[in-house]
Image (cartoon, rainbow over all chains, first blue to last red):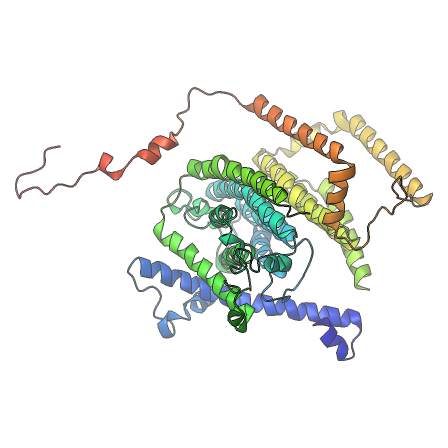
Length: 348
Length: 205
């Protein structure tokens, strides 16, 4: 895109700046729109599984429900608790929201269609997702209220625990792909198994890694069944208890943007991203972008499905799963995968 | 141009947030400013082309170390009067640390002014391989030339970790743990059963 603006007679700097801003808007605006629609989809799926109708009043099939909610929240009064630490209280939702958007910079939507095609793409995703915990901790502390504080402690312990095993799972993927660049990881999955299946998930050694990644992703984003941070029977509304109006909406949107990011990572790292599922020429007629969106939507359906069917975990079960099951298993898979790759001469 | 703007932005932010870290009264604010300083330092690393180090800086320091700092500091019951009371007593020690740091900085800048160090390997090849990515270059160095040091550092960290766990772990007899395998083996029919009593009969349990 930079070269396009340069061809209009701009200097390199101006063209680069304009291209980057356009790229950011091209990702952020559709993302916000899809977050609004995905909240609607989540409620619809959840309702359908509970044999209810879900939102069906605002607009055709209730499609405009999220926008109505957004407007309602926008018109509400922002309440800042007088005992809160105002600066941090107001920064916390901004941090959550910004961080949720930042990681999308390295996600490839199509072959080469990525805002920042950097060599350390996967590390960047890890770095940004590790920042996400600050929005929660800051909110919990700044609210100066006991339930948000408990929730913040829980959330940060949960996120840090599952980030460890996610790290090991990603190492397996990186070992096999031989690169940290997400676009190259997608390309490495082309015809990965028998030369016909596109995706690491079809590999018997990496399939368990994908299952663990899916579950860890749910825990990392605080989705059901790991939504202990918002366990309403114990913690009111968790770390967002004291938030109202747009600050609350920022948390809401950030959370769903994070869920979508996890779905996108599942698609990119294990299911071949923008590649079609099978390495057959006729499937390449469909644009890669369509495949990518379909995969993301499928994983979002899985997330909603799990939310609708699985009861919430107890806190000690959550910690046990993270530290006593996922960590040893993923660690041993790093050894197994690298041993297998060494033995078969993958690195030679 | 962008390079220069970015450099000055990151540099000024790093120095400023570093200064506010030590100037701010509230320890939690200090830690948050420190995190901002780490983050901007990572930005500077990206500018000099060390993107791998930059990402590690964010993952390790911001993502793990600073979270623990924040945890500890948040749990503290902050008493400002007490914080200031120890100032005179600890002043000599603080001054000593400051002098050492100042000496190191003067030495460092002096060495830098004396001329760049020519990096090279004993067999005369260039130290920075062109055309390879950061990760590959660091990985090649760590796993070939510095293999022993790298693994020794790993072993030391492992020992330190185990040591910390052993030191802080204590067997407590007054808690009731969860027996997960027993819980998982439990089936619905262990606790509930279906009966169809006749009307007016009641149920024998």
